[in-house]
Length: 184
View 1 (spheres, rainbow, N blue to C red):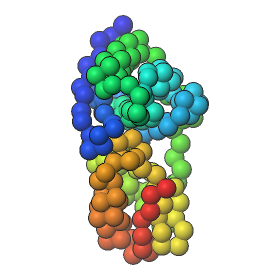
View 2 (cartoon, rainbow, N blue to C red):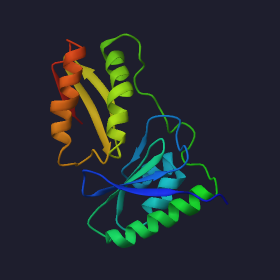
View 3 (spheres, helix red, strand yellow):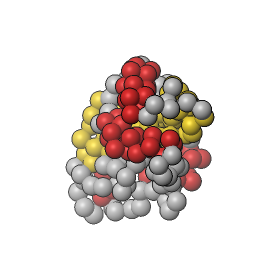
View 4 (cartoon, rainbow, N blue to C red):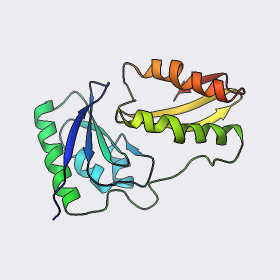
């Protein structure tokens, strides 16, 4: 059993905490689960975390895990259980995500969607990952870009400002076809 170094980080979302670990959990991107059923399908680690009273969402990133707490459970208890679960699970070198859980929804192929995906991957996703979140492209219809905001970005008080003033501005600057960015 290998010791795991875990650092707790606060996020802009008061319902979410980020646990940074000293090992690679995913090659890139993130896997988000907002139900136990989704966790069963995608990540055995998330199943263990979802079993902790109060946890309503888990996102596994490249070197971090973001948990979101609902109405039940106290942060002190939840945090202690999350730390113990991460330490035990990762220390045992068990699989973090199931085969096929990482899917790239849009190819970077020179289309408007492909160019948006390239910007998301190169600039935006690494920035929001610093706060324990992730943003993925759902679809592009006309000039409207639909994005999924997960981890600490989901429900974050500042997510609308990030979406409109940050992401929308950057995409419009680089891709003239983009008129608006909307969260789904």
